[in-house]
Image 1 (cartoon, one colour):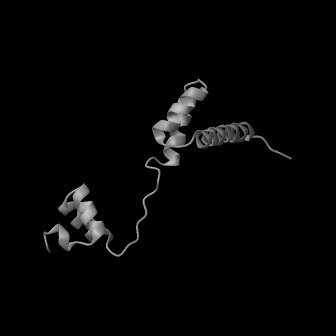
Image 2: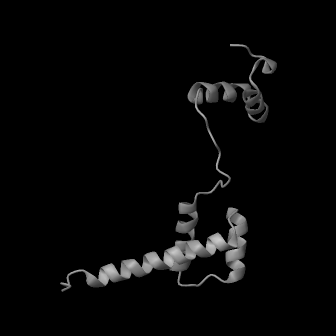
Length: 107
């Protein structure tokens, strides 16, 4: 295999410059022939929801300011963070209803 960067296709040259030639070669071996897209969000939505759920389980409500700071931290919009909070509340409500209905016959 050629060890000269200029002999590589452009994407592999870029990877080699950012990391190393060995890393570019490893990525080539692992992913050659595949089309890969990188999500614009580094942190997954599921992780953010879990984080928010833990924060709200501590018994405190997150203020707008705190939610704003978390949105910046995780690179999500405030609107999306509010949606996550709504989803968490709905999940909690559903779980409570299911727990209350256990053992009861609904006619």
